[in-house]
Length: 276
Image (cartoon, rainbow, N blue to C red):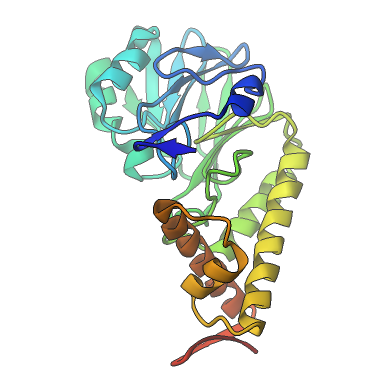
């Protein structure tokens, strides 16, 4: 939950953090080749904050350096900054890419263009970029071949507090990207926000089911007389009462409505949204 602008944990959540607790400013080894440092930007949209990933040992690529925050950048550079050779991002949003220029200036690292199919051949690893748009128009993921780990940006997350589609997201394209990820024979998924996903198949299936359930709730609300995203939120998600959460939920519903309209399940009239 978010309290005073910061993401905090309930007592139950604190007891169920799992094998890789998320601590701001501390490099956490997730595998022999991957470390994570949590950014200092917790919010409803970013969960505990942006996960900055460092891939490699002798040569390191930094993925999503996060916002331009000096303390966070100090933590990343302090983690063997002289070995950082490349910097890249899963998308151009400030929560992911705000610190790119400062990171390059501090380390002399090279910008890696995450164009689909581009590959980094490090001393110990091969990292391949994959275009997986939908969450944003310029969204990419990175597959660490040796460990079959997908650094997935905003595509998939286990934390329900993180809305996977909102704002300018395109849900149809997001679903295509998720199905592409499902065919990659993954062992782990490392999201931009929240904990590492240890069971990719289960997480992907749960994400698809979540989207489908949300579609069903929206259609049910429209059949019941709702005609706007605000009315859908009020009728089907009445348990959400925090104003910031409601605003984010409404944005999420609007993305679903656009997808349902593309599928010709609903339509938008002057009087509002209706089921076809």
